[in-house]
Length: 81
Image (cartoon, helix red, strand yellow):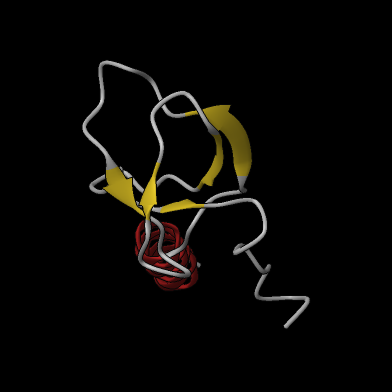
C-alpha cells in the first residue's frame, strides 16, 4: 500500500510540474488598454509599426515579457486563425 501511495504522490508532483511548465510557456488572455504616456513607443507584433502613445492596443502578458502589444486591427486570436 505504501508503494502505491508513493507512486501516486510522484505522479501528482510530475503532473503539477508539467502544468507549471505549460503555464510558463503559454500566453494569457488578450486585454485592451491604452499605451501609457510613461511607456516608450512599442512596435505592434502584427504590423511592426509603432503604437502611438495614448492609443488603444491589445496586450497579452507573460511573466517575463511585457512587449506583446498589437493594434486592435492587427490582433488575431490563435483559435480564430
